Length: 125
Image 1 (cartoon, rainbow, N blue to C red):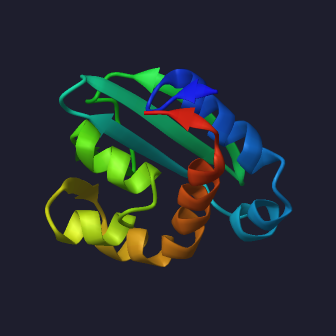
Image 2: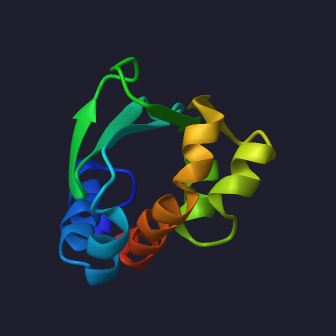
């Protein structure tokens, strides 16, 4: 079982996405770099998607990316436990978004698959 919001957790998410038939169909044409930052734990992780293949790495918060999401561990935990969805956390100001709003809106279906797979990973909070 992985500790939530660690490299081991994000590596498991990447492994599961790469083995997921639904992801393979939806994400095959996607290439994007997404950085998720937990501001109060000073931890940032890159989800790097290249033609649907997902990898993850621990990175500096200021690494260049197409989309960046920043929030507290409490906000990320609400997402991870399924108590709130990404959109309500961003709209409610709990997670800050930086990047192109039109581009991220076009990827909402794909991003929701990443979130769904991440919720299914056994984890400790």
